[in-house]
Amino acid sequence: MRPRKLSLATVAGRTPPDDERGIALVMALGILVVCAIMVTTVVAYTSSGQRTSYFSKARLTAFDAADAGMNNAFSVLNLPTNNSLDAGILPPCHTANPDTSTPGATNPTWFTSSTNLTALTTWNKNLYGTATAYWCGDFDRYGAQWFLRSIGSIRNPTSQNPGTTTRTLSSRVTIQPTLTQPKNNPVWDYLYAGHTGSSCDQTLNNNISGASRMYVAGNLCLSPNVNLAQSTVIVGGNLDVANNAAVGANTSMSTRVETYVGGNCRYGSNNPPWVACSGNQDANHIFSKLADGATVAVNHTAPIVAPPLADFAGWYQNAIPGPAQSCTAASGTTPTFDNNYSTRDNSVSTVFDLTPSTSYTCRVGRGASTTLGAAITSSQTSVTVASASGFPTSGNFRIRIDDEDMTVTGGQGSTTWTVTRGVNSTTAANHVNAQTVEQDDAGTSGELSWNATTKTLTVSGTIFIDGSAKVSNAALNTYNGQATLYLSGTFYANGSLCGAVSGTSCNFAGWNPDKELLMIVANGSGGQINPGDGIYIANNFSYEGGLYATNAVEFGNNVNIDGPVVGSQILLSNNLTTNAFPTISTVPVGMPSNNDVYAQPNPPQSFSG
Image 1: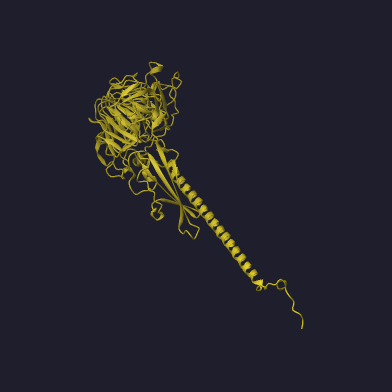
Image 2 (image 1 turned 45 degrees about the vertical axis):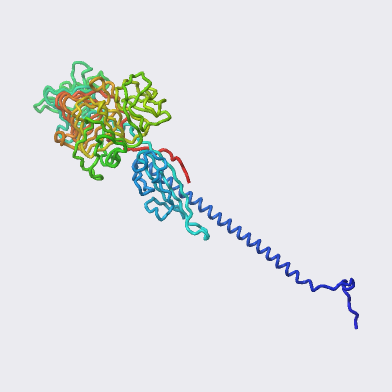
């Protein structure tokens, strides 16, 4: 029998424990659990980070889409062929009519905050890869400003948050109406008769004297005893001079007329021979001189001036005020612009009187108006007005009285203002009691208003009446501003209308058409005037401004005019006197043959989102 081997514990007198090999398993399991937790944490953290990254990327993509939508909206407003004052060029963000909002509101209640994409069926939509941009705009007509909104949307890439990720941007864009533009057709420097194709496209039965420039696109015939004495006469075709008729006079170089004839000419009533109209034509009673003022001759090379075209269809849609946009501020009896929009058919049967016995106001957009409470001299620096309602209550602002601009520097909010006179390159002048006072820097989109007390018409922008108009007040009437008045019908002036006055008559020497120009554009014929006429100026009256008729322009006896005239023919009674209006460089928007321009959007403001 072998002896038993003793352990150290036995030798020490202690009882040995159970086998310790199981603790390794416990430790291994613990380590595995810790490792599993760590791995799970890392995986969870990584997944969360990945989801966060995906979500951040989705929000950034949605923002980029929203920003692209905002740029799309702004580009529509900036497109030159679009009228940014037309509320219909962008889909509305809200179903309510924005014109019912509080005038001048900077955050109108109709500006929606909805991001329910299923409800945005009327908004414009663009796809940008996996993202979509929805965009729209609400127009505040009174404030001439757009409130734009764009929503960028992308499908949420994480399963824990199904649906879409959206970003919403909004901005405000103010619109500056364009009221004038450079002249682009020299036709507005002439009395222009545009008819061609007849043996006598333009016949003059009575004298024309004065200093205007006359252009006949076709053939010109002078009836017996007629004298044509203008500063310049241009005939594109032939010039037929009857017995005892003449162009100019041969008494001196100053009485000769600078004459251009592109065709032939002759003198007499018994079928005399035609001759090429060049060189000295005194034998044919064409007493002409060349442009040098010293050479007796007719210039055989007639300048070509393109006939103007009036965009009746375009301005029917875009005139402010007009059929598509009536007055936003109105008092008195204002025009009826149309009776059955959107059909342009001369539907307004009642002729609108521009100069009735009572005052009226029709304005679109910002701007206030009042009258002087007392007359002022050219040196006064204090102005009293009947009312300050609607004018700024703080800060400097500009006003206009007659042809003078002033800056209000004190008294804002009251009816007595301190002013700086003759600003904006205007001249300080006397102004009568009750004269119209306009806020001149407000950005009014268009205006047609009449002060019956001072006999003053205030005009601005392009105006369209689907009917006819007249001047009925036989007193001396004046107008302030630059505007084009389109008429589907005709125009009849049974009274004088002047851009500048001196005493009891038009101030022909002092009128500046670059500052004051009312252009009448008539498409009709007959009715209130003679058949075949589009415009008629009655006996003994004066008109200072522009006249355009699709048909003939007729003048009564002893009429004085100053300004461009364009018609198929120019018809005279006795003794039309024309005045030497300056060469025009700036014309009101809407002038026939000029490009159609409307307004200029300013850079976006008040970005949010």
